[in-house]
Structure formats: structure tokens, C-alpha cells
Length: 446
Image (tube, helix red, strand yellow):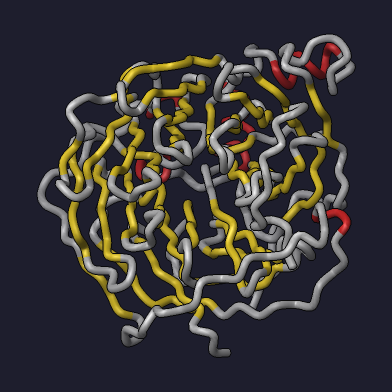
């Protein structure tokens, strides 16, 4: 059984398929480094001052990496909508356009007749093995996700999509400056939340599923009362640039946010005030997440660093960096709090044992070189899998243990930017540049 989803106490001490495009193939145990919280000073992973400066100095601007991952690679001219979702955005397009004029049309398509979703909750995985690197290769487990619903209504690319913790709702946010709430079972549109004057890049549900947080290119974070369908009166202000990532703490009393301004903020939700401002990175912060007991928060950025923070003190407990130093655009703690899954712009998703400071698994096959793409952990009969969007318009699902690609889901007509897993049922939801939200189900039939 998989070790990823089993509950344990969070360690706080110490700290038909075409050939996929790949940049490199890494081994299970890749060169990785632990860097103390002294901003990668003497004795750090990068022993060479020249390499350290090139990798971590603010003199290595976002423009340089943008050139590497942008049009100088021979990419086609991007549309304005595509630029809204590129991790490193063109300097001339720093401000997104506001929501398009005129009402949008909300439409839902049934791919197959509606079926009962009364699936039994997944069993708890056992803890026979303590880490993925010791796991024996297990027999392949079959998953058969099929596209069931297409939810239409957004007029621009959909940046992120999330199931509510109670599994009742799907929330999606878009460059069209709106947030839409959908019934997770039927796909019926419930409400549209409007109030941000610029595109919305990130959303997060509170643990009780009653509040949704949104981060926007207007530099603000807003909280929305979902039962009432209204924003809370006080916006969270303080970031100096686009808000790229947000996450609620497990108790719902704190909110973490990461921004293009390179900072990580911790907010007191009830008081609507900033608790801590951490100069976390030297490039845009692409992802944030809380560990299962709320004592730690993880952040990642274009500087190639993944950092683990103590939420009580604001101290950086550990810095993870891979030898390739690729920009990191998204991070997720594993359900048991022992690992961090990270998406990087070298078309890799890496699983880190952050206590030991090493990468233990690398998942490949998808394409991710330019966009801020994310995904999630999932379970199938107690076995863990990872799911991710891709720039080749597909969704990839990997076996956590063996790194095998279990399934590739085709259907989107553009880059798949986000994927989430239902908290109790065998259901996925995805979103992308094709302006759609799509629901996928595994009904247990081959």
C-alpha cells in the first residue's frame, strides 16, 4: 500500500500515445541539496560563488529566464490570453485586461448520461514502508478515467480549478476576472463571483467549504461567502504585484499567499490583517501550500528553490534545490505531510523528502516549459497517484511508487493548466486555455 496518504504526525524537528517530449531522464535519487536558511551562504549546495551568483542573485532577472522559456525557443506568437497564464510574462503585458464586456454564457455538456457517484470512500493506505525509495515495484493498478462533463462559461483561459473539501462544489477562476461555482455532481452552474478588476490566477477553499479565497492580477486577495454569493467587505492588500498562489491553513485561520513580487505573506483570516511578510525568493513565487497540521508552509519560485517555513516563527527551516535549478511553478504537500510534490519548467514533477532534503522520485512524460501548471495527489483503492496538466493538451496520471504513466487523458483543446482530485470519489476536474472546465470519472469499468 502507498505511504503518501497515510496519516502521521508532521515532522517538525530539523526542519494511443505519441512520444513525449523530454529534456532529460533523471534517476530515482537525483543530485539534490539541502541549504541552510542563511540565504545559501558559505558551505551551501552551490560551492562555487560563480554558480551561486548565477542561480540566486537578483541580477539573474526574470527577463533572462523568460527569454530561455519564451519566444527565443522558437515558440509561436502567443495570444494575449496565453500570456495571461505564462509563468514569466512579457514585460509589455504586465497588466492584464479587465473582464471582457457583456455577459458570458454558461453552458454544460454531458459527454455521457449522468450516473450515480455513490462510490465508497477510499480505504486508508497502510504504513508498511516508510518512504517511496524503499518501495518494491507493485503490480500495476488500473484506472479508467473518462470525460463526463464539459463546463463552459468562461470567456478566457481558466487558471485554476478546485473541489470544495466537502466535495459538493467545483470552483474555477479565469483571466476573464470571474470565479464560477459549479455543482460537482451535475456540472450545473451555481453562481459567478465578480469583483476583481483583473484576471484571477489562483483560488483556495476554506476547510468548511463556506469561504473561497481568490488571488488576482489586481494585487489583491478577496474572500467570498459562498452561501451568500458575496465578497467579504475587506480585501487583503499588501502585495506589490500579481498574486500567483494562495492556500488556507487546515484550521482556516491563516492564509498563505505568493506573488510576482517574490514575497510570501501569511495572513490572519479572522482579523483580515497581514501577520508576516517573508522575503522568500528572488523570483516570482509560483506556489504555496500548508502541511496537514498547519505548522509548516511550503513555497516555490522561479529561482528554482523550494522552501519550508515555520508558520509560528516565520523561520525558513529548509531550502530544497535540484541540481538543474529549473524554475518551480507549483508545490503540494502529500496528504500525510511527509513529502512535497513540485512542478518545474523542465517538464518534470519531483517528489521530495523534505526532512532528508532529497528528491526521491521524478515523474516525466508531460510537457511543461512555459506555463504555470499544477496538479494533485489522488488515491485508487489505497494506492497513491499524482496527476498533472500538460502543455500538450493532455492530463497525465502517474503511479507514485513506480513512476509509471497510468493514464493520459485527451480532450482539452489547449494547455491544461490545473487538475484537482475529488476528496472522496474517483473524480477529477481540469481546466485550461481552451476556456473550459472538464469533469472526469472512473466508474470502475474497463
